Image 1 (cartoon, rainbow, N blue to C red):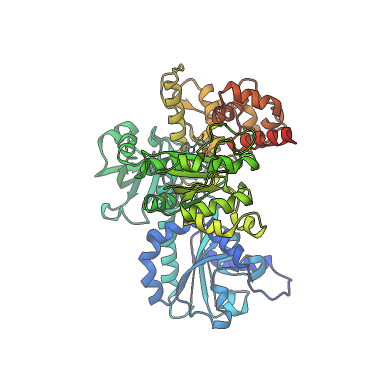
Image 2 (image 1 turned 135 degrees about the horizontal axis):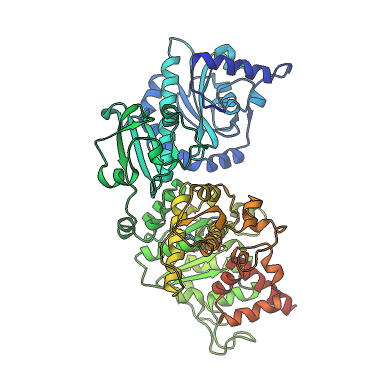
Length: 627
Ligand SMILES: Nc1ncnc2c1ncn2[C@@H]1O[C@H](COP(=O)(O)OP(=O)(O)OP(=O)(O)O)[C@@H](O)[C@H]1O
């Protein structure tokens, strides 16, 4: 659908269509309220957009909102308000919560209204006074604009609610338009900032910083990766069809000459007609970025939620505050902990990792707390100091903490409170000085409610909670793809494998495909797909045809599409978390582990499964054997 702007000619049609959609119904139109938990989850899902708004955009208009007595609402893609700024007095107190977080303004419940109708119409809209289907809104004016991800998917909307009098409406719709342009530009810049060029253009040099400037994003080879609405409108571009277009086909200059000669004072002629003042900004050089950053900061590739976790961890890492990391499998929890440790004052001290899901229940205590000689049958006759004391002076990483047996939780809590460990079978206790960091992919609140996790241990571990976003929600996926490719090429070089050591550039089509996948196995899964494409590629470009055909046919995450036969020698590299354990019998698992001299990570890599899945299989095996 064509993108629309607030415009007196078109907005009445929106209103008419909204009424037509609900014609014939005699229900009372009013928003429903979501449960608090639901609202909180919706807010969490919008966190990256929210932090972008709060980092800059809102601060600039806060005073204006107060002065104009209006409020600004952020709603998610379903039309549920998740955040509100500005005047709280627009509605009588009894109805006030309809303009508060949790109110669902989806058109299906609320009839014609700015939020719901803007989401249905997929364009900017205003709904004035009596045009609202909901009676209680008929003394107000609503303006809304859809918000889009850098890939053009509507993921929410921004609405401004005010009184409809005194000719304010023009100002209000103008403000909202400027806000939506600012947000669009910031999201594009954020998303592409690490490895793309930005070309900003305007008719006047003084206005290059205006949100109304056109913005074109190019990859290193001068292919159009993205553009803002303004640029598309000015140059008559289509966001889908024109992606990948060469710089030379848009203006009268050559890409290589432009990037190597000028960055400011540039004038270009677009579409053979428009002379525009331009500013070209290059991505930061990778070398300089990597050299300046700490190991933790090097993980920061531009995703706002990850950025927040990195900032928090950087500030708190040396303050004795326990950290709890939430993240789905493969989101990089272990990588994060290693980076945090390397960036901390304890970097020279040990980092001891324990996967609580991997150790059989009856062995966890011995493994963690150690034991004295002859503590139990089958124990090492020399005794064992245990992992907690091994970590003394350093850091203890408790992975999959939600899987720790209840009895062990009580004991661990005591150790964390007293900072002393008593080995099994012994009377003497030993002091331990450790920083603790735990990780979980399960919501611990549910585990506590189900009686499987101790609330007191949770409070002890969750001094601060950090979130690692799933890959499908990361806004820095372009940069991450480059990092994964670089790591892979470097690893191949280090292993003495053949190849020129050149990091190939993915084509826009491949990039687009990678960005659109749901990736339930997260970075681990994408890493394996990229490893396959690298093995198949033989030049400086990585293209869609370098992926195994079954991935493309499925166009869903292939590891969960077992109906496609594996391509011999290729798809074995691809992770098949739901299938690999079935084809690898328990009996052979132990033998294969022995072949890897006990190195579980190496075996997991070879099998294309996560370490956690491998640990679980091994634990099932030993439990099956002992019963
Ligand atoms: N920032 C990153 N850059 C490049 N590769 C990464 C990054 N984070 C994670 N990876 C890669 O993704 C894979 C999974 O990472 P990691 O083991 O840290 O995830 P995890 O969340 O601990 O997984 P699990 O919960 O299954 O144990 C690893 O192979 C790692 O190399």
